Amino acid sequence: MTYMKQSANSIKPHGYWSFRIPSWNLILIGILAITITSFLLIFEYIVNKGSLGAPLDDVYIHFQFSKNLAEGKGFAFNANEPTPGSTSPAWTLLITLPYLLIKNHLLIAKTFSVIFYILTGTVTYFLGKEILKSRKWAFMASIFTLLTGRFAWSALSGMEVSLFTFLLSLALFLHLKNKSRFLIAGVLGIASTVRPEGYLITIFYFLILLIKSISSFQSSRSSQSKLLSRFIVTGIKDLLVPGIIYMAIIAPYLIFSFKTTGSFLPNTFTAQSIASTTLFFKVKMAILYILRYFYLVFIDNPFIALALPFGLYYIVKSAIRGRGEYRFLALVAIGFPIIASLAAPNLRHHGRYTIPFIPIYTIIALEGFKQYYSNPLSDFSVRRFACRTRMFLMAIASLIIVLVFDKVLTVLNVDSKITFFLIITTYILFNIGVGAIANKFLPNKLIKNNPQLFIYIFAIILQLILLFNWASTYAWNVKNINDMHVTLGKWINENTPMDSVIALNDIGAITYYSQREIIDLVGLVSPDVLEVTDGLSKEEREAPLWQYLKEKQPDYIIILPCWYPEISKKEELKEMKRIRLDKYLIIDCEMVVYEWNESEQSFNEIKLMFE
Image 1 (cartoon, helix red, strand yellow):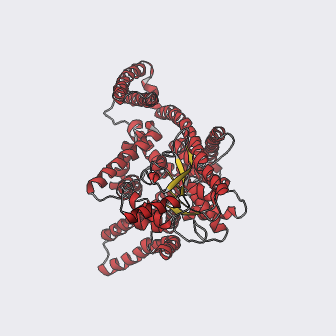
Image 2 (cartoon, rainbow, N blue to C red):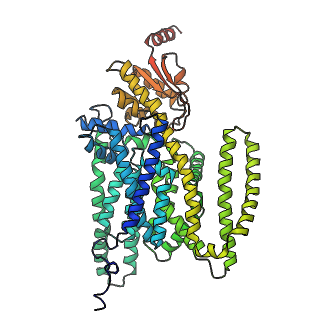
């Protein structure tokens, strides 16, 4: 009878998903995500005077591939010229399906970005619950993730960032829940066709599986024949079958790449690699990458980031001392920036390749705060704990004022030495002031019993301030792309012959709106360009690129002169149109359209003959 009287809420559901869905938390997460994206849309609408767009030119690269695919012209950038020029074939396919019915790439891509932004908030909650062992802390992790300005920026970018973030968090959650390796391999396979970082994450995962299989084999006391048989069976189940599932998902694009270029790697792997001939340069780039990587983590939310080292320490310690399921998490969190700093130290576009790791670092940081601040060691008295927390709050407040002060001084163009002196002085004085206020008014008991309260209050206030700044950044990024790339694409469409060939370095919106045949000077969709620039630094590429252009003789060349200062000075190029912007936030400098001046070239060739 006692069992029959149990309430429905106390009975836990069984089955494959063995957790109870907290509907109210999910509803609140969804409401917050929609509110944030609406906030950014309003900014975009106001700054762009009623028009919408994309904050990156790369978005239109997906659109161009999608358009040709939908029209039966193959997976190609130039119609009927197949090329593996996309790092995210899965995203291209995803936006192509609805495009067959709704001829609006921008609406489709933005909608999908927002959907996966919301889904990431949801899966972050479940992932946080597995690590933090608390619904309150998990809900906090989800809220902080959604409020992170860079992630909110990606939610309306129309790019694949939010989809990859969702898949990465989902794979980690499934691993911590000890779900089927076949399912996790499938998720990682899809993730690898969304972003190339998925390949590295998959290597980490299979490395963990291998270590686990070897450990299980070594700890067994069975006979040698039984051990060998068990090892083979375990290897097939744990490694071979998941590996086959993973390869079945990624193989089509790899085969396509090999058939079109002779390499299993897409063009972008070579085009975006950093050329270097010296070990010193590589080490320098790696160090700078690591420093900027963690700077980005810090500005996502300074309050949370300061607790990240404690969280990483706890996760690594747990992984070493028996929490084997944390090994994958530790490898992803620490291993990724290390490998990326050596293989592809690229943090352009607000570090968009690092955005998928925001939920992971947020959860780990909260675990650090929870372990270090919520559970003080026994030899720490209440007063010392309160003092420690006050120091934490004091450091946060001073960091905020320093960041703001630095921004103001930069805008005012104050000399760098004076700026440094003023910032240090402000930092010291503000620390003294905040410390005095904290010691006077913050009660010890409140701090000891409600550490979450201070996280919510200070972190959310800080993230709302930063979110306002990111909303403005997002809107101006869209305006930059609309005013330059979209405008030039439409201008080319209206002012040049349809059979014109254009060489350019930013290939997205200009190609999408002009629908002209193009030569990609970076080599993303023009593999023959890579043959003359591979292994060269940015400065060294200009001379061979110019020789390449003289051989191809495109009708028009559209470049950023700050990227190609020598080419922009060539007498064979006649300037036709130049676009300058009020603010350069996502673009480096002005863009110029040049017409190939055949008469000038002929004159120079004749001149060389007589010399």
